[in-house]
Length: 154
Image (cartoon, rainbow, N blue to C red; front, side):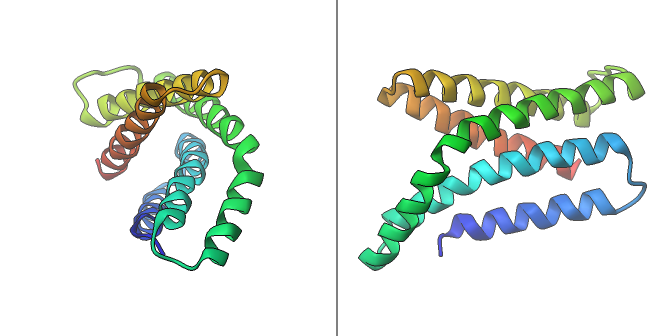
C-alpha cells in the first residue's frame, strides 16, 4: 500500500478524535462531514500512487478500473465538500463571528480558500486538461490538506 493511505488513515483518526473530544456541536459535525468528502477525494491520490508503484499488473488494472468508475463522482464530491464547508463557515461566522486574530479562524479561512481553488481548477480541468491546470489542481489539493490538518490541530 501507498504511504498516502497511511497518512489518510492518520488524518481520519485525527478528525474523529477532534470531533469526539469535548462537546459535539453541529458546526463541528458539519465541518467533519465536509472534510470526509475532501478525504475521500484525496484518497484517489493514494490510489494513483499505488497504481504507479511496483505492484503486479493485475492489481494495477484492478485499481485503475475502480478509479475509472469513481472518476465521474470525483468532481461532484469536491463540489459537495465545498458547499458543506461553506455551510460550516456560515455556522462558525454566525456562532462566533469573524475574528481574524484567532489562528483557528485564519487556518479555516485559508483551508476554505484552498478548497475553492481545488474545486475551481478541478472543474476547469474537466473542461480542458493541460499540464499547468493539473499541477495547479494538485498543488492546491496539497495545500488544502496541510491547511485542514493545521486547522484540526489548533
